[in-house]
Image 1 (cartoon, rainbow, N blue to C red):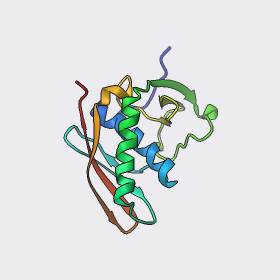
Image 2: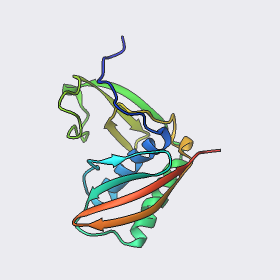
Image 3: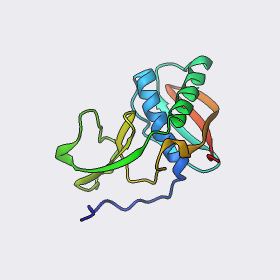
Length: 154
């Protein structure tokens, strides 16, 4: 029997949304920050903000982009698993869930790189993302914004 989940209120562009998961985990690993609490994901361009004590250098921004493109090239599988709230794996945070989130949660795994609860649409493997390019960044008052685009895999 398929678990009952909350209704999803938006239709993301699957490659850009899957890239958001990679970007979140890359930022956590590189800077020790939390996953973003807000992101605006679209086909043409996407924006995501991270709370950081200082602005990353140009070299660090290039490393973020390079890391994500390597994860795309690695063609990691994107899989789902359903768990109840009392069976959440270690390290999976629930702080972004809405207050009315269902008792059963869907975890999205991207290879061994990332896992988080999500009800959105995703690619079947990272190779379907195509390529990832950071088009701009800005830093204001502890908030680091990344604007990015993905180009479909051919």
